[in-house]
Image (cartoon, rainbow, N blue to C red):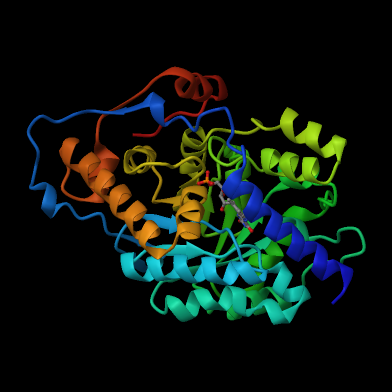
Length: 366
Ligand SMILES: Cc1cc2nc3c(=O)[nH]c(=O)nc-3n(C[C@H](O)[C@H](O)[C@H](O)COP(=O)(O)O)c2cc1C
């Protein structure tokens, strides 16, 4: 095994350990507290009859939830991906796996991702690579068309997510900071695969300009990955502390709250007309109802499901049952009978989120 494999595998293990146990949340909130859905005292239907099923890129989901990309690429990840995939299959959800670069470097690790397809034969599965790997970094060449097709095939994926994580790369000691030619490389990657490509931020959000650029590059959906949940600057700060790297520890703390809150990012991305996945600080079914009312098609949840998965399948089921009940109550109390009704619920946008939207001139489309 080369040093390159060992570094990527060790980093993935450390991410899991640091994220599960550490102080890694952003201090800026995702914006849900500023969104108010208008209460309807007279419900439209029985709570038990509320249907939160939806379509995403031609696939039927029983609830508008993606188990967000987290892991794979080291031995312990197999168990976690297996538990999460069981839940995706049982609840009819979508699921992303973590960056598959580790398995390109060391094909022996492919099974740590492929387990997701074995355990969730009917789920909408999303393959994952980093945008930074689409351009040459240090001594590593850019990923080629064949490698992109291999990551899709590895999990028989329904879609490929290309994640943007330049905040993390900037903080990480060994991060890939080259970005020249990135837009063209991303457009080329979209064309290289036969499944739809999803552009995915990882905690710093999408501006309207970035969202429109990504649409023009051919992406078929946008995961806004906004500020307000897990902060990868904070994750890298904790890792840097573990390694006695003062530069990374300080940089990660300074940039811990950098980015565009998730609620603002949803509104930013709407004029693209693409399906939007709202990830970043989604912690309750009410947060999800608000994200969908703002225009998201799905929500993504990472860290709470990682914590649950580490406790086992029953904990993941309990977390999801509670979350989905909270979402159904949101539809019920705002006078709807199905998920799509949330789109037309009268809503008030207050506080910081209103300020962001006004200052940026991001009109909130009805
Ligand atoms: C341990 C861990 C590993 C992650 N690895 C990846 C990854 O490989 N690829 C990716 O696109 N996002 C990755 N993410 C980011 C998540 O998909 C998500 O965007 C982010 O954690 C915000 O969601 P949250 O606030 O619900 O945690 C990772 C998140 C966690 C917690």
